[in-house]
Image (cartoon, rainbow, N blue to C red; front, side):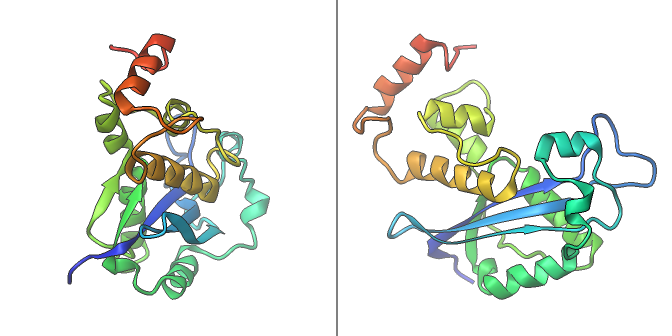
Length: 209
């Protein structure tokens, strides 16, 4: 089936994690998902959702809480992965027909692993855009950079809380829009990309190494 190209879905997930390796018998599970439906024709967000997910094979560690702000108590009454999967499918029934994107490849891989674990068909389409990689290519960087640094390069403030899935999905949408929907970027409007790149290098925001 041909891809529908009027919208793109931008996805971020948060998962149980540990300072070093998982505790015995536990696996990393998605505990939060954020999805932004971005209308490419209007250049605006047409819908967004965020869900907490109750883990079934792991516990939220202190390290995970420090990173994400999510506590074990917060997830006690939440729906499990399969239930949230069904809610997403009901909200976005044609999701599989669209291109989707995330900042890096972690979200794509982890959602596939969780789908396999719960014996559910993969929710997203086969066409995935790694915005982290494309951002580095666009700016001619020597390596990929994190979401915070990408926002800094674009002179954009972080909206909401970092490592909150919906907030991150909204920030990633802003990066996508600035890079691929606008001809120019900058606080005051019209700055040519090459001129902007030179300014960033002069300020040490982007290094040659």
